[in-house]
Length: 75
Image 1 (cartoon, one colour):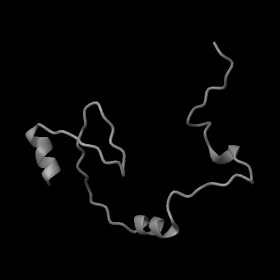
Image 2 (image 1 turned 60 degrees about the vertical axis):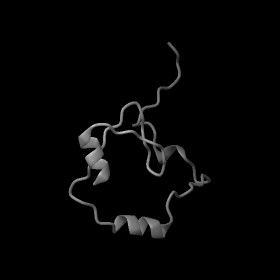
Image 3 (image 1 turned 135 degrees about the horizontal axis):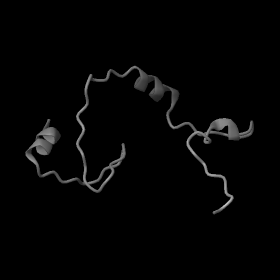
Image 4 (image 1 turned 30 degrees about the horizontal axis):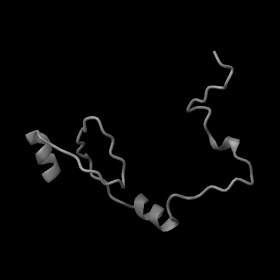
């Protein structure tokens, strides 16, 4: 066994950054305000994908064969 410190989600925080650390914002203040004011529906459809992960903003081809999946995509 190694004596390396195991990092868990609880250990990872901004406390490790000092005053000189510069964080790069992912959103502009305008984008963040627009996102916070956006109306979300009560329910969102989810299409399960086999053997792949599709991240937001990434375009990749997916295949759907089941009628339920095709109807979900078309809606």
